[in-house]
Length: 320
Ligand code: TRP
Image (tube, rainbow, N blue to C red; front, side):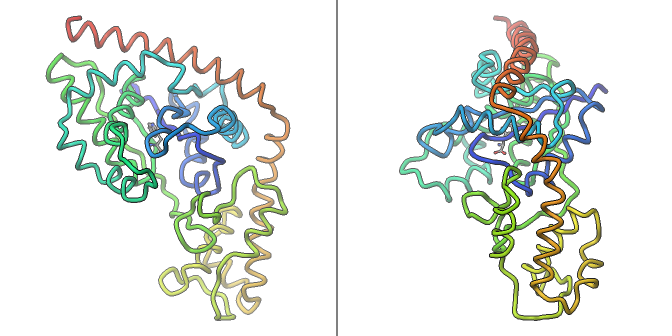
């Protein structure tokens, strides 16, 4: 079986350490082993907000984050929705393959609607998972490295692929989600790590910003540091973060810190994170917006060639 990896992110702001350990590290690991496409999902930005906002800036920043962590444009095709008309055109036949009831049942969409600040829920909010199926199927992606919240969308993709093949003949593989093996990193306040909550360390954060964020991180009143995810989630989260950055077990770190208390825990974590981010910051500093634009233009061209072939195959199979 010729596996193809496809994954991507919405360009809505800087990627953070949660993204790194949750998915970026995995992509760096997978590139070169499989053909890989990395999507800047720019059209998906307008699912839960009225306008794309600073879309050009966010797009180049996202590409710079990718390059800084070591995604290699020689081994991965980095591209964007808005540059690939043929990918977007797949959405129309794909929409005909799913029912409104199925679209309404998607738990991730339901959750996003519940947390959206928009006055009205748009049609795109219900249909973007089908657009995401086009993202995955345009290149006949088979492996989709994503977090747990994306599993319903991979299910929609499988449904679309299966129904298309049943109605029109075998064109698409049935893709599989690939879940990260790392523990979910929580934010520095113990909640879900998210840039909008101000509890995330961006990959582009400076040393001082990083130190300030960790200084403010929540801990608890017990002096002796132990690794106890149930009873002491905030302390455990800092230990997990430091452990991931150092490649060491959080339990062992806790034993070493012991009576050093929260102050030592924070110092160790700050040093670990800053040391870890050093080469990422260095690579980023060597790159500019022009590099991001050029790499995106090259990736868009390659992705488009692929999309043209798939759309042609789809139209043939359907008899157009
Ligand atoms: N929905 C994903 C997110 O919000 C981004 C995304 C768009 C994606 N298209 C994709 C992820 C295709 C994997 C495959 O993070």
